[in-house]
Image 1 (cartoon, helix red, strand yellow):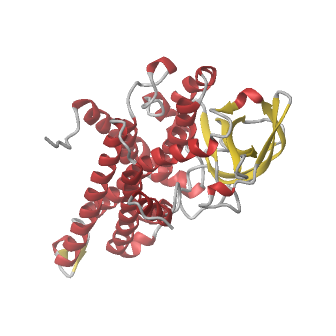
Image 2 (cartoon, rainbow, N blue to C red):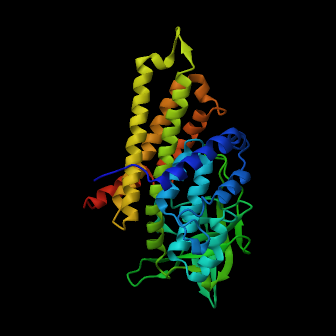
Image 3 (cartoon, one colour):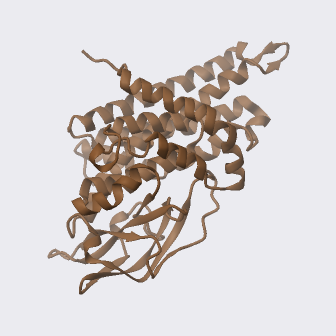
Length: 385
């Protein structure tokens, strides 16, 4: 029997995050967004709630939950604001999960308790200025010199990499050459403040203005050989697994944004009057809102399916790509329609839908573009270039 209803535990979590988002995030996030300022008090509050530790076992200081619990939290946060949601998403899926999945027991015990409490944020340094979607074109290098890695190169668009509480960045780097001549790529943990590790000025972004994003550079940056994450030469496979998992979380975030557009519009069309009636009485508006709800609902089912397959240990690469593609489309389409419904007010940054419109576009780019998702789906169907 197929049953998409949430368990009591999941529902309690969803409701608690929804309450937090509406009572704590919504009243203040607009000001952080306008100032392009990182919301440290909100991140601290999420840490106290245990949101960063949701999928981490209790032995490492986590909540002992699962990845679907994280997705539910992300959806509820993104219904109100995506900057806060992406801070949690990147902090867990890109910062915490590589350490948990591939780290040594010593690395886990060193980092996971503080990460799970939200006291420290981790980042994932994959994308490079000239690389974009071609992650295999990594140019950053790491050479083993005695008992130290010497890292040189740069990374671009790295979330959570320059906050006051950033503890480390996991960097992918070329560490040698394989017998077939291809690059050997490994992942290495670089603690914040390491000499030779420079965090550039934060980007001025179209959206996600209250989140932290920087370019990073490494100039003869030395870290202990023990900072290797996972097996040498397995960095490429590790980050592919990390991105597949992360796409489910990004899909949940996209669903939240899409649903948030519906929430805001339902409130507005019941209040706004035109030609003697509330605009919600006009069929053109009703149909637009019906389409918006359809997109959010469909995208939610897609990420639920991908998450359930992940938790059962089944292959879910195709389903994760589908969920990410469907949800990012839903977010972008709903943000556009919501802005149209709000008219001039929708073009104002002070309104949630104005922020939603600015935030939606990156969902079609980050953690794998829409074109990459289509490529992955095609490959999973057995099609080859």
